[in-house]
Image (cartoon, rainbow, N blue to C red; front, side, top):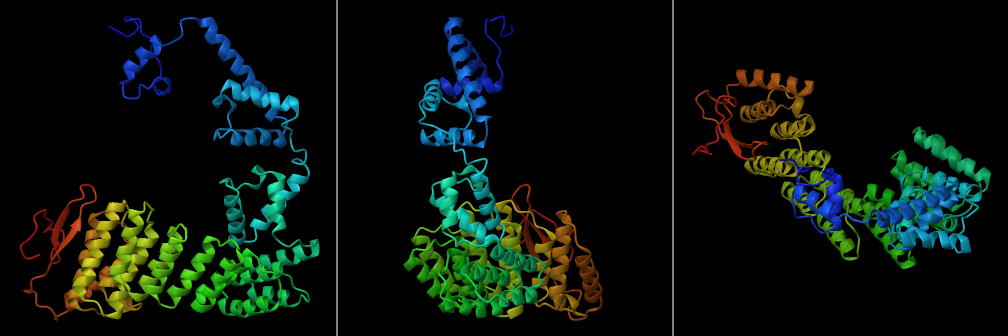
Length: 497
């Protein structure tokens, strides 16, 4: 017997979910929701139609009012935020709220900002032009927006007074000065550093905005030594430094490993209450990383977190790159696990750096070969847990690790037989997992097979080691022997492992 024969009305799943939320029926099956929905439907159609008609009329009035222009639309958005609503759709509000908005319009309590189509548009364009100067400039705007309690970074969605306040924080420029800055930015984007530098030096009177532009250009062109000299000129100029100034200087000092100078600037910003952006912290952390001070880097991160900073994946990537330079396999795995425990997405590029850490450890030679093998296995297991696919970049670093880790390990005419066999087994395992081997890896495999075939260092009778891998579909470990990777795959753990 159908639901209709039982006197029940069939409704759609979305409608059933909506009714379930209204009548607290979330735990009931969908069919029971449909039955209760029909039974709870008002019997007097007149009362229901009247309320629905009233609300539809109010919604139409407000939508028509918003279509008058951006200024009118902004009034409605501001009203929604004032009453604590996160919805801009009038249909998502109560009748009383809609009526109150229309009453405020009639009384003059709410009036559109007539500058939206004229003056405000100029302010919006100025903010957008400011952001186009570079990442550090965009970050200043983002930090300012967050300080106002908003998460909307589109300048056109903010009041003219908010835009004016932000622009007042930066020195005003004449059209000629703006033209000079734009020219330097254009040269930097084309990596014409010498021309950009000459253009800067040709200006007799330099303001802080010009210094910010040339410092940003030095970063873009990776001219950090010249940037260090420009930092001295900027500080000696006597100009009032802005947040962008400090961001640029900390970024340059970070790449040069100037820990003391970077720390001094960081403390200056705190003392002068200048907004510190994430790039500022990145610059400070990078200074420790390029000084090879892993302990100091981790301490700095902990101190920043205790002061209320949210440590981002970018900050963790600085620590991972520092681990790579030091070949610290134990620490890099701990960092990745820490990121995963915080709910961060560990991207394949970071796992590539982590595997490169193993290669660096192999190159330095201070880590036992079995420890490096275990680090590789642990990284693969962590990748499986994070849902990261093993790709050719990570594969290349693993092979480089197995071959000794040095930058010229791929060009060796011969490698130790044991290492060569491990690399061949790893490449065979990659094929079993469906990983596409690059032409470079294929050439390496051919060379390794020829070399190991000719090698007399290891007798044919010498037993090879069993290896452990993980099946991505089941998450279970399986085992295979280096001598015959395809023919020895088994779920049973060998006794000799």
